[in-house]
Length: 275
Length: 303
Image (cartoon, rainbow over all chains, first blue to last red; front, side, top):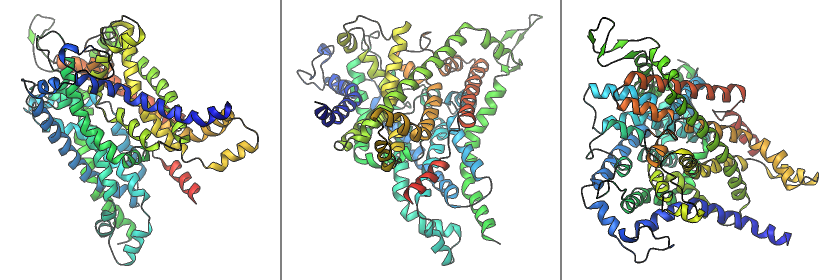
């Protein structure tokens, strides 16, 4: 008996974890394929399957397609900018010896801990004054407050893992630190930069409070905000089917990325212990 | 010029863009929030009955009003309760998950992929998802055989938020703890077994102390993240609901009503709360934020 338990307990544990993580997501997917008339069914599979909700998401006046484009632009720009700056900073913090290095590192980490709301209140007032409300940059600029520390920290821990003999060899060959970075380190840093880009992109794609505060026109809203404001056809009930379908559309690209790059993402998330 | 000076100059050059951006998007807003919290705007009558408009310096009035308001203390209590309860649940569940994953010989890829799904789902979407599950005639009530209005107000709403948050972040804690577990060399366990330690004793006396540094950092990051909770209660239950309103939501609501002064005061209070918790963790509990000690141990282990 004990032997049997010992043999199967790990499998049971694995099964429990998988169920825990996927069951709610599964329910969202299943519900999204039900017809409006049987949205409250509790059967494990929709019968009959229906694309009604997906038609409702992209049709109608939800401006959902546009919001996906907005999310892509905002998250994409945030990612490119922060990964560029983060690569430079991460290299300096991981590979160069200079005074106040730990202070600099602590400052970068500290900025990532600030509650978003304490930055949003004054920025909202500022952006209202200078007419930035309802623009892409009113979201991209504040996004950098959490994305940049994340990128710097991830890349710093990545650069630290590369062998130090590389620069030594470069120095012996007469390279300056900058040349060593450009010609030796950068080419082999591609996987780390890529991982960081995925993590930063997912985090920016999921951003909510900044996009909610800085933009109030449906045409400029990002997908996460747009979905949360879907109104029902009749105005007072929540259109759950449509919301679930939209939720699936917003999440599926991320889930695919997760499946493809799971090893890298886990390594990136855990190396610094920072979200 | 010697190499150290040159490295220092290169470092300054490489770091300056990052610091410029951080100064603009973090430094400036923080100072502005502090200034804002001491001011009030909008039209008001002064003592002699004249209308004054524009920004006025009001000293600590915004803070005094905040501390005197029941709504503030409700939000403060909600924030604290959510933070303590969700982080406690997440640490227990996350550690359990990590132990299981560490033991699992097969199915690792599957577990890793599924554990990343809650992490990857946007919090706003997970709010909608749980709102659907917790509907009056939704699947939660069916499974539990209850008839509760989870997403309207009161303690069911609190529970709904706690469940949804734990679902989303316990797996993440699990990942961090797993990374800590994988650093523990196997011979430590062998030694414990030779000394006749039971599985539970091994966990209590070997695993927990050795995984503590990783756990401490995970807990700190989760605490700071939970303290600023906004998206989940906002989407799952909605704004201006006493049962789930957090400090972030309260500040956001004030800012949304163009009451920037009180909004800034609330956000500064939340900021100080975060600073105090971070200070306690780093100074008193010795959370190793920079990962130096862990990095050193890793190199010792591999050497």
